[in-house]
Length: 234
Image (cartoon, helix red, strand yellow):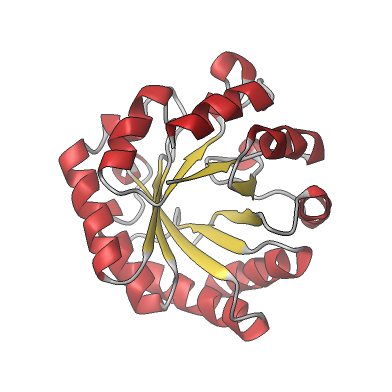
């Protein structure tokens, strides 16, 4: 199981790298659960990240605007991201989500076929009227994406497991794998959740708050010792 840690700047990225994170995920919590950071921040983090480590960047909790989102995805590619992550926040159903993701995949793969596209849904989608989380693997498969992911849309202390239990998450992982996709799970993940995620075959576990001093994704800063502890659990 790979550990994805989400820094907001170069300094935090260095802490994540020194702590042993496998994937450095550029994020901006001020703009939401999967808030997008600036192109120059992605570039700075790519520059300080060893070549053997991959850099991920979210393009945001996106609206149903396939042209806007595909252009943002291309921008993340050009800035240096290896993983391009799309939060399907404004997509209300399978067809809207597929429309967004197909265009993102085309924009990304036309630029560099080695880039990795992540379709991200939300375990608490009903709270923001977003697309049903359990069809994310089908959306990712039909769009030609590489990874199916779940996070939580509203960061209010509730975790992934407050909305989906181990059995449902295991089915999600199994379905993603049956389509030849990788599976990433996030959503205020705590240390105690790691054994469960590992047990069900999760490929990538994503954290920010758990890697920050004080456990707060907004006010805390990533600490290499906390990252090391999480890495051991992987």
